[in-house]
Image (cartoon, rainbow, N blue to C red; front, side, top):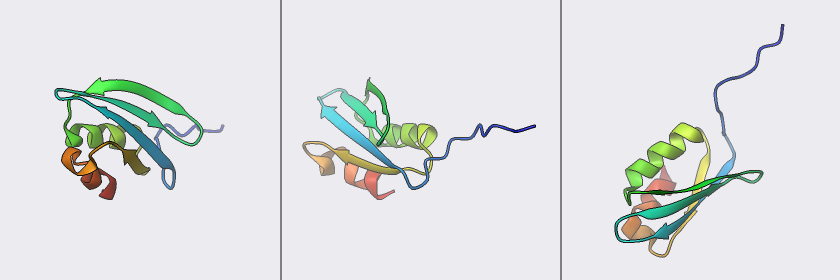
Length: 80
């Protein structure tokens, strides 16, 4: 009997994160080469975003864009 893998693994895959930044929240859009994952709002804390990416896209290479990456901590996020 064949078994199906149930663990997510995005090793070697690029994960693209687009940010629309506001004072109290930000809109986050996540894409892969083959998938538009979702767009959602969250608090402007890079740690929260990093946890989300690691949970839903483990092993992926995260790339992002925003108007001011240093201020958002995005440069730190991408480096991890």
